[in-house]
Length: 190
Image (tube, rainbow, N blue to C red; front, side, top):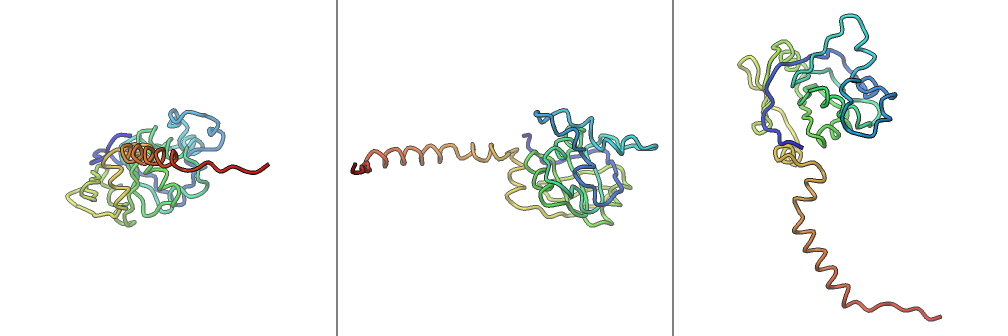
């Protein structure tokens, strides 16, 4: 996973609330085993509607409760594969939010008015290090869990977090092996 510090670029706007994971990535595309290639199926049913236009920009602004519904990981995979790097919304479903952070897709919670203003601006910057979203000369602060922020800034997914403690793990394993050599083997009477 690549480290995230700032994401700058054009903004796409999905002006819908309560967008669930089945709308983001319909169930018929969940049979794929690899994590890539889901972008072409993003919002599959909506993309057939007349006038649908959702450019693959770095920043997506969405409505409240984005990512509700089932806990499928395919929804964040599709959003990221499509080209989005950050999603800004008034609220997210908890599991969806977590799934995004685990793959390096940055979910940002801002108030509804700030979301609309960012969408209207059409261009913005998300600064994870400073915890600010910048657009049209404004700086809007956002909150993010300290540990999630650290992992994203360092580009660490769950495996990366584990591997960053490789020396501690090796030390523990060595101690465990030494202790096991001195423990008596239990025998049972026949």
